[in-house]
Length: 83
Length: 400
Image (cartoon, rainbow over all chains, first blue to last red; front, side, top):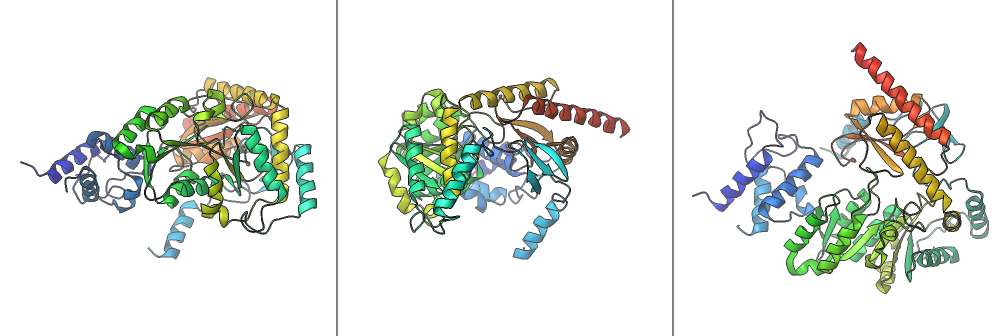
């Protein structure tokens, strides 16, 4: 049975996939802007989709700390209280 | 990356965007002939990039009032509002604005940017949550950041999305501040204010409305979108600027809440900035009088906006969602946007070009701003320039 963190990771990768370039394999270490080539508009759209999926609000204040997918998973887990 | 490397990188990315013969950003305007014409790049251009909505920058009454104030009070206050920079004229303008909005309280700030910055960081702090429309202006984002509050944005003009986010906040929703604009500066669309007010009332939150682009433009007497929709009593704080319809410089906040006066003591952008010059305050007071005395200016503005919007739409351009004094033309990628801007410039029309991330989508915009001072002939000349661009585009595509 996947851990809570792994479930979050799996959901994030699934929601992220339409935003990522086709030839890129998304990993926890993939960076949003450099590896996945997301501009700031796409990052915001992604955040809103994640918020809807998890029924949470991700404050803009945390974004400067989010560099890669694992950072994003950690922030979501903090908000939903699974860590 | 070092500080200087960072600056070098920015310089590299923007090289060529500013030049002597006229450029899409930071152009040198040699002379200004009227509210709608200036000399850029060595020839006369129709100005379609200003926010001079009522065309009052050359109004004789406003100029005379500015001149008189400068003669009476000097060129500058050389101090902040809380030190030696609150002259009788500043206080009189605050009274004028409070009376105009039908409220008891008003604070005049040094710019519209400072008004938003100063209000937001004074109203809320780290213990509060701000909900802002994702299309809000940079001054609002910066104010939110400076406040230290938790910042949550909601989908543009989507009251249901705002409702959902306030629900997630639970019991703390009554301690939240919602921020929206009357008329959005990039796409020129109006806020879904009536629906947002309903959500605000449902959660007992506070609502701040920036009417920077809607003052003088919307509402029977020009008070903005809240007046047009009849929801003024539901707005807690209205901010605005003098640098658009009132053709000057400065900003303000009006409110029915007496607590607004405390902002004078708690707002660092208010306390630590020099106050607006007497000439500015004098001209803005006059512009406020002229705006109220000449409601036909608003009608002329909307006639021009409607004419230009329909004309561009008929040519097949992708525009913002509704008619208004800000008409945003989708210009696609940066290269196309620059080509388009240059084609219009060569035809004697100066518009603003805006690049992502300053635009709401990932597309560049040519942002046309209409003024009541534009003549029908000038509006037609703008449409003719867009027609020329279309023809040039066809020729270029055929040659490629």
